[in-house]
Amino acid sequence: MVQTAGLLRNPYTVGVRIIVVNDNRQVLLVRHSYLKGWYLPGGGVDKGEIMSEAVRRELLEEAGIAAKGNPKLLGVFLNRKGLGRDHIGLFEVTDWAPSETYLQSNTEIADARFYSADDLPDGTTRATSARIREYVGAGGDTGSKTGEW
Image (cartoon, rainbow, N blue to C red):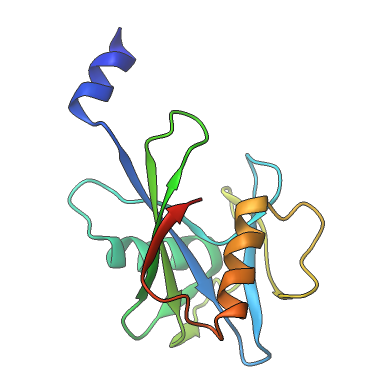
């Protein structure tokens, strides 16, 4: 009953995932301490926060990366897993700098590393692999689009 009431008040959730590429054209992936698999960094958008702010916060929290320029929205996707109401904004960050916690593990992130798009680690999630393939196949610009995560 509480979940039903929550769905009526908040019929969807919003999250972000971020594509960060280093000078060697490798993409950043993270492995959470509480989930199996490798993912693009990201997370939920907090109440009152805009998506680009969430991008900046999540990158700093998960990978010790400070976004310098404006994150670029590449697309919005519906995640049909779980309740089927999660919307994910996929962003690209090309202008960034390492902070003092660069690629250090923490309570949420067990590992954070850059990988070649054609040699992703075992356990990379299906959606993560698909977004990276689309990004690389479009020359780093998927264009604004919507679809399923």
